[in-house]
Image (cartoon, rainbow, N blue to C red; front, side, top):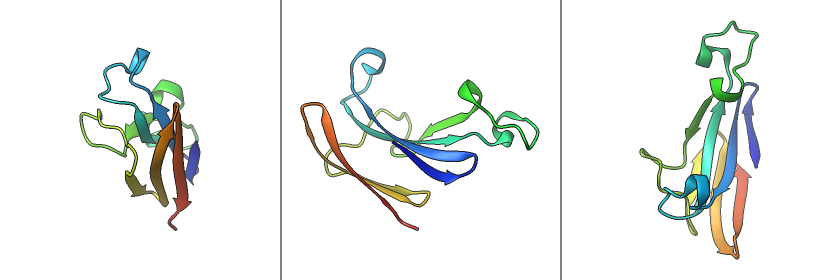
Length: 101
């Protein structure tokens, strides 16, 4: 899920399962990432956006080392949005997203 913030920035709400590439995670769950594509992130001129690996991607729903994902009952608010995690059923997650602006 992609949530707009402003022109160069947005949030993503993602389900990560602790298998394969993410097998290092303690458990499966939800993560909110801040994606910043503003030119200042990668030292480009003001009209150029940072794309792909040049952009800044930061998990904002947990703290370093970013291993703990949001689970049932968790709530995160920031950048004008609130994300609440409900129960999971067979790999499907109940997530409620509301604007807080």
